[in-house]
Length: 246
Image (tube, rainbow, N blue to C red; front, side):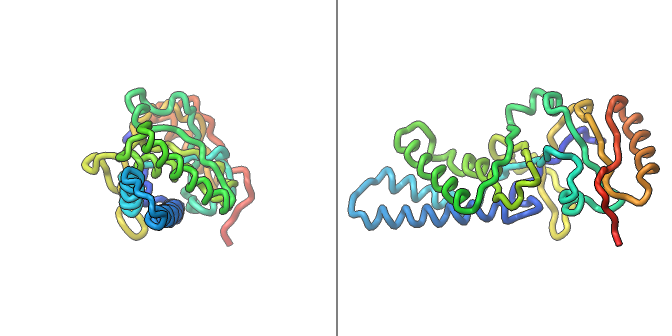
């Protein structure tokens, strides 16, 4: 709130690290198989071999400084209170998306809805992206050097359907953030790089107070806090799901 910013976390440091490991592992296997097929075919296609070889090198780098902010369609989900909220100090903030980011920020970030796939379809989606990208570079409609950034952004919106109840949306940087522009915050096992996205705090439309021992006292404090920060028209409510710590 003091910074009037959202902290866009480096995509490799998201809470579920497997979200980014999985698509890169699948992509690496697909490209390795593609490379072997080219070598075993006996046909010489220098341009295609160069493309696949470069893609394989890029995939093994595991992405650049792509930064992400996560949102959910539902601001009062039990699974998210349990997974991400600490008892007595969890809050869900709802935004008016149209007013969320300052105009000068939007060109560098995109708001995308996550798409959930069964595992087999997830793997097919990765393969389809790679195959289509290879053909696009072959036809000179895509640039070889853009592959890693484009694949990382694609991977950032793909999730296995185990997580479909999260109904997630993500703001994703349109390319890698320059390292010197990153800030760092404390994590559980390491410091975490992030990029502060400046926003208009008047875009805050609602605040839901998470599970706590004194919900009315918490609501009174948040109401005062919001008012003191110029948020006079914000809807403030307590969580609506039975939840307690035993």
